[in-house]
Length: 211
Image (cartoon, rainbow, N blue to C red; front, top):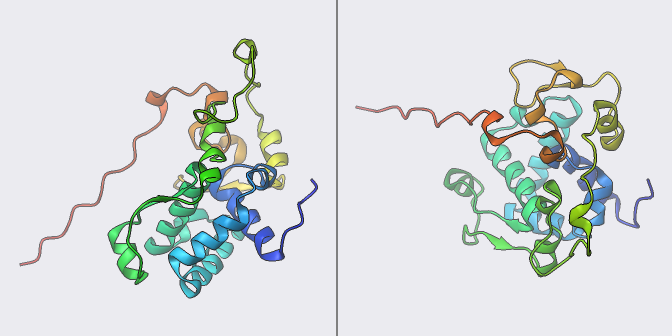
């Protein structure tokens, strides 16, 4: 893959956002938003706090632990990054994370830039396009969608090794071929997974009452 002329910092940012988004680096570069997203995340989290998060996420990703190895605050930052890549907007953080980061700005969602909305990866997950932008072209509704990606294809797209084990969203490590379909990266629509087949998330833990 030919990587655009970017700084080493942006290149590392894209590489570590691949496991967060489930999209290959090629797609992240294609948005043209990598540098802008890095600047936005650093401004919103704070330079020191973002550097701390980035170090923690680098270790978690390299050791195949995934988001489960992050602290609650770092997990919230990872969620915000993923949300930004998908929608083009920086989300409202959980109040506890907002307070822990001692952010000086208002805790409100905002679109990073007009082009960020158009380049949101969410449109690609269902082969759609934002209203009024990037129309697919006349007659494309008659074209069958691509075939379901194979495990080998996902390994190649994401630059992963043959002996990869996965744990994110699971209780223990398993081989990529054994990961449930709804947890695989890429386009869920390709895998023909109905919403009813996706397990619901666990509810919040019961709050302890203090006398």
